[in-house]
Image 1 (cartoon, rainbow, N blue to C red):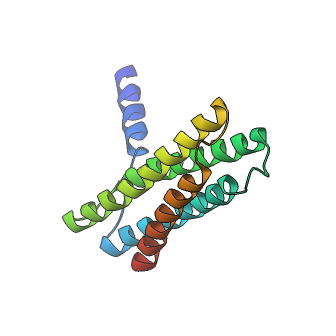
Image 2 (cartoon, one colour):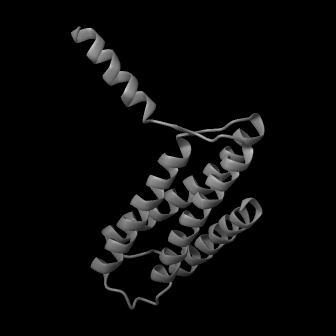
Length: 143
């Protein structure tokens, strides 16, 4: 009996790790929503980093910490969606490539701020703007 409960608990836990997309359109909508969320977060970070030093270091750390957590959460959630077709799988890989790059960028900026300051704010703003444009394009294409 105990083994049955353990098996049931494992099955329920494993089922919570991923969610299905019923068809390609559903998957596209999930991808567009993920791109929108990460794109908005990237824009907040871009504005914060490009603020010309007007934000205090502790406040910037909070903004970047929250942003890194948000993007990681989106990556984890979208990465757990089962693509319904090979076409959808390619779409997901393309999106995750951009969102994971955004996560690395934000995490890198957080490390810089924790050490002292953003090394090159202008370059960071340009990189973030490029990521934001790609995410907006992705969102608009699949909404």
